[in-house]
Length: 77
Length: 376
Image 1 (cartoon, each protein chain N blue to C red):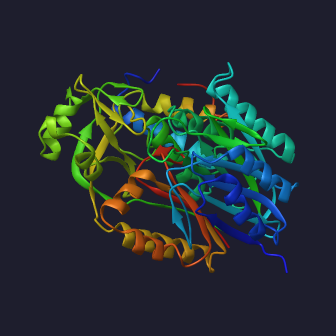
Image 2 (cartoon, one colour):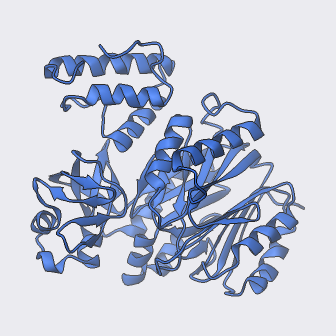
């Protein structure tokens, strides 16, 4: 679980989620921004924000999985 | 010679008279898709049937409004129709999701989306968002828009569904959407189109973010209970420099909140201070989120002109048509500030059809915004 992880680990986790998502979007930055906008508006998670509350990475991952992404990235770490 | 786009309007308040005026305009187009926006006093089922009779192979969707307009007309009580030929919409399918038939919103939207995919023999996750676009018309008073947008984001994450929520001439009693001879007073209608021409989406509001940020505390539905750890109404009043007892339409209209993404505000409008000190908003605000206080640019007309110009520039050619969903709050502002003539002039540059909506949709539900789809 990452809920009580230090901020640096959360940022690292968001960074790895970004990388996995971008790969699934074939490196298409415009589509990456589109999905990030969806995330910000629907669950309040910005994959690019430097300051994140604990649990945001988990929320981002869960929401992206509901969207059908991150199927191959394994579960929470 | 047949036409590829028809934007027609009738000021008539009686449906038979409106149809008598509208139908001749629609005889010289072989329509693939037809959208109509009518006053709540009109018989939307009859309008839907008449459009279907004129264009049996077209998909026809519609909704009631807070006012209707085209590039040539502007009304409350009338009907606006936009018809698109196969040279604009290669193919399309529509579906109705009803939320008062014992089916949850989630399941109803998923079923409607699956119906669209099956009828078009497509995978919603695999189609190209550069050539496919969805329109969603939501019933405007039941508050389901956030969930509808969320489910659309799950079933078709890369696809844009944009639109507006139905209105009822500001009576706030009953709004409706129409499809396939049916009316729903608690549902949404979806139209998914494969376009034969380029398209762009525009979003504009006449607000800009201030440096003032508000931390949203407890939230229940569209009611915010706490802001910055204080009772919401009192905290909001202090921030905007108003007395709590003065919180009303004028204060709210000039001081909405917004989620700011890449400098652009996504407007969340307070609409009522409730007796228990909470604030009712026109859309859901996420608990724990940080919103900016917005300030009006006081340039609704100029901002709209710039948004249309920029959208046309992105399109790379003169738009052949624009379908516009303009917030009822903006309609009120246009009326109060006597901006109807300049606003109409701004939207008169190319064929346009639209309505004043009880909330706008694109990726999320929002307020006080103009959302538009321009086709090449």
